[in-house]
Amino acid sequence: MDNENFVKALEFVDSALKIDSKNIEANFLKGYILIKLDDFENALNYYDTIISLDPKDSMAYYNKGNTLYGLGKDSEANKNIDISLKLDPKNPDTLQLKGQILFEEDELNKALNYFNDALKLDSTHYFSLTNKIRTLNYIEKSDEAIKCVNFALKKYKKDPELLSLKGLSLALLEEYSASIEFYDKSLAIDPTNNETIWWKSLALWNLGRKQNAIDQLEKGLKIDPEDYSLLNSKGEFLRDLNQPEDALNTFGYMQSLYPDDPEILYQIGNLYKDLNDKEKSIQYYKKFVEMVRKNKILDLFNKSQRVQEYLNWIEETNEIITISPQKKPQYWQWSTKAEYYLNPDGSERSELDPGISLDPGTMWTCHKDTFAGDLILLYRAGKKKGTTYQDIKYLIMARSDAYPLEDLEETVENGWEYGCDFIPLYKFENSLELSEMRNDPYLEGWNALNALFHRLSYKTEEKYWKHLTDLLIDKNPDFANFMKGFDREKLISQIRTEKEVEDKLEQNINIFKRFNHDLEIVSRQERCRGDDGIIDLLCKDKNEGNFVVIELKINKANRNTFGQISGYMGWVMDHKPTGKSVKGIVVSRGYDNKFRSALKTNPNIEHIELTDVLSELDMKLI
Image (tube, rainbow, N blue to C red; front, side, top):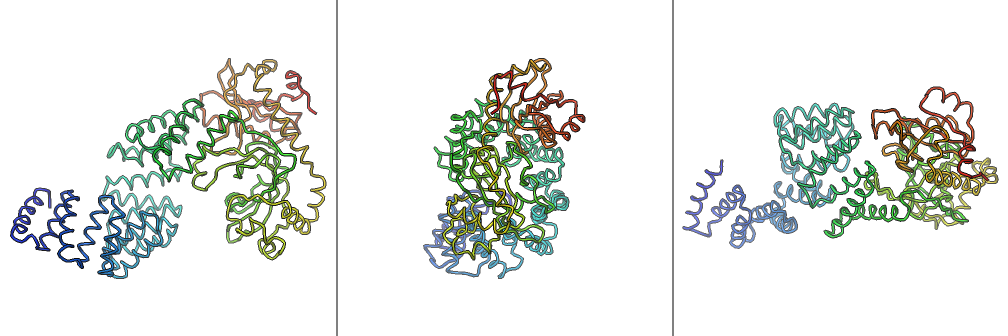
């Protein structure tokens, strides 16, 4: 029925109400018509009239609750739905609406119970089915969601929403190609559904079909040029494709549409940071923090706090990662999931092998009070390929002080706040199992064990640290020899010396003229976003205009050093394309044969002897 017919129906109902204003059916019909005409506020009056006439009319409370829900008044809606359910606990419509309100309040398991109760009364109740599928996907039960959607499709065979939800369920199981098939089936029926278009673009992106993903977003933006989700993904995709100027245009347009959205300010701050426009980056980060605090946006409070900590950090340190070891180390217990200590094939990550590298940029999440030189035992938790891990496997030393992780989106998702560079010191052949620790009476008061290692980091008292190392020595006799020979002060001295040389090089970059390079500094300690590692000095050649990556080592360069600088050069080519080749300079105290052989494979990488550089800087190594 179109609006014209609803208006005619309204005239008929008004005539009936003039004759009998207490006619319950006429009041119901008047409320229904007003809702269809988008006059929700006035519709409420007629449901209130029915309730005054019959306080036990469950449907009046349901309709009033549904109308309030449509007005965004969830709290009032909830009260009326609860009354309706007391009067009639077996109405699937009311049960479904109660579940929907709980879903939006993030009470997902409670919401699921209501959808299930509605489906017990009517197994094909459409809204209960679709909302149950959505909820199962939200609580990461996509296998169950697929069973539910398959059942629903037997009844509603060509329903575009159900086809789209099956696509989403498959995508959440990382079956992206199959998900796209169902998105396409849905879009063949309803080609203007931007939610499905958005989901399809995400699946295409995850398949590596990045241009197709952006094309899909553009298709949706032709339908609705102001669609928030499509614009936001477009901006994020362009940023990931190393097109910060285009991404900036997208988020700038979003800001004009949604000037009160602080997330857009945050994204613009990130992009100016990518473009090395520090002043504008700080400006937008500050606006983001101010808006969140002024408007008391609780969902973004943690992120704003981390951004503010980052702003404080760069004001104090100028973004240089600090190294300020204490005379006596602090002891920490770190806890980590399988995806961070194992490779996708289930093998152990080489980055945690002792002696693999002393290079900065290999980051781990930590407590904000972590200092360079602190010692850490790494607890492994989780499952991988049928194996359960619950043990202490590695000894690690912090290579840097803690620094805020403002530019990593996953920090908010995972509750990460700070990171520090680290050095793997020892890998225990015979790890210390959780069961052994739980059965040890001495460890009863240990905070990490009492919490079953659920947090990311715990400060460990020295008495527990000594007991743990004794237990590990009992299981790994060679560990005793390692501890006797471990010279923490020497290692810290090497790290400090490298930083001092880097400081001096930054201030005297012109000394590279002596080695036929006329350079200017672009950035220092630039973290390779998306990859591990920090570039010591990123420069530009004043004559040729190409980027030059400088990697500093106070020890011998080896094959790992060659791989490291090659990776940094590749990152610069991807993230800062100029159309010119990127060159690399390794400054080190000599090199081994493997580095010498690797050097022959890339004419854009050269080696400069550290002693020659130190001579120009008027420095000596101790």
